[in-house]
Image (cartoon, rainbow, N blue to C red; front, side):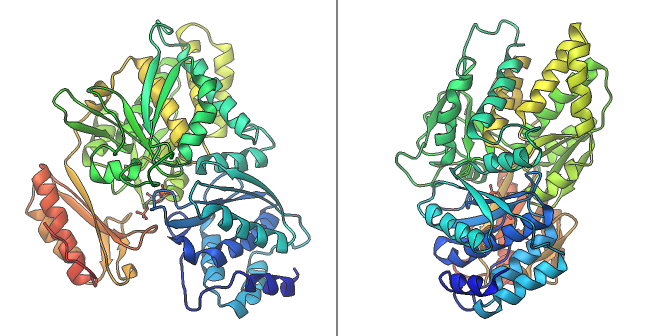
Amino acid sequence: MDLEAVCKRSALHAKPRGLILQYGTAGFRTNAQHLDHIMFRMGLLAVLRSKQTRSTIGVMVTASHNPEEDNGVKLVDPLGEMLAPSWEEHATCLASAEEQDVPQVLAAIVEKEAVDLTQTAFIVIARDTRPSSEKLSQSVIDGVTVLGGQFHDYGLLTTPQLHYMVYCRNSGGRYGQATVEGYCQKLSKAFVDLTNQVSCSGDVKRSVKVDCANGIGALKLREMEHYFSRGLSVLLFNDGTEGRLNHLCGADFVKSQQKPPQGMEMKSGERCCSFDGDADRIVYYYCDADGHFHLIDGDKIATLISSFLKELLLEIGESLNLGVVQTAYANGSSTRYLEEVMKVPVYCTKTGVKHLHHKAQEFDIGVYFEANGHGTALFSEAVEVKIKRLAQELDDGKGKAARMLASIIDLFNQAAGDAISDMLVIEAILALKGLTVQQWDAIYVDLPNRQLKVKVADRRVISTTDAERQAVTPPGLQEAINDLVKKYTLARAFVRPSGTEDIVRVYAEANSQESADRLAYEVSLLVFQLAGGIGERPQP
Ligand code: G16
């Protein structure tokens, strides 16, 4: 490791003195102006991780749902997963080191992780469509090359596409071909195979309207559309030709505001969905005949998927262990429905795909979704092999169900939640079950809920436990929340510091929208008072 060369190059990507950033829910995120040194250093870290794991490592430049002026970066581990927690700590350490300390921090990581520096390193890089992303990804490349790492720059990709590429490369092609074409072909073949099973297929071509948040999803859907266009037509809105990324549109806006995105033309009963800025989240919605907006979030997506998988298993006669993983944001009605009606075990983890993904790996089939639309389904290797064998061996109804299950396994992006893949899964399931969007929505009724953001001087004053459902600090906050919750019926509320934005998130649900709104407001006020609120006080 030529530390002198690293120092020289690092000086060209100097860290603003005193700036401390943390590897958060999904990597580093902040205003793009403060990220040059972080990008360079993550290039360095990716090389060390690649040498240690003797695998290809991914670096994605994106801030996903954040506003256009922000940016961010995250590392992707060998199986396409989020970076291991111990390496997140190294990332925070390296990112926070003052210029003169960078060599020592690198040397300490090498020693602690027993990195064999004689190993080769290979890094794959991709970026979203933010104006700042191209320059920032060059800084990553600078970090990779100064440590002698080899790299491939995929240019513009959705975040889940990069996760897929990493997984493909490290599975020796078993998972698929590590190209955009390989991705499109794998998913669309699975989609076409699945939808060919729809009775009276070919009669009506299905269509769905997609709000692409003015992001990369539009580009990638256009690139892919012709592969599956015989079965599904996608009508794109907010495709980036005008309008700012994630501004008044996209999955995060639709979910948190509970209203349609700007720029989408909705007719009563039409199926619409929104991606977020890097196309790793999806939520569905429609307007009814009275013009009322209905949101179908990650919880209902998880329910649709897990009930379909359960039905297929029943048909095949296989009793595999299927579990659903959610976070504290999951609507109380969804958890009740999954546990009590579907009799599926449900687990709650902290926010962040890395936590859900990890838990879902414990099952033969693990379905995980955050309410915000981030999720996928994971199938253990043994299950995948077994189902693919049964798909060949069995005939009649059982064979058909096994073939459908085999196709749906290929349709999920098992490396990460993926808006494109999830959309195709949902469209296929709705077609196969002959469900309208209204029928899907009617599976259960969501408890009214409200999410708010509160600005505080330092969001780290709030710490939580019990999968973020209880605040430990500041003292007295949880007791005060409990007292408020008691005033309402079927109520629940929690607060947690965001890991992607400089705010505290507040969630409340209750038996009526007025109560949920009121409770969320009262809890926000508590946070403002007890956790050092700044700026404007929360308003009712
Ligand atoms: C990221 C994470 C998600 C998380 C979201 C919000 O999403 O991948 O798991 O739910 O941030 O996190 P927080 O509440 O900590 O800000 P995305 O789509 O922005 O990458």
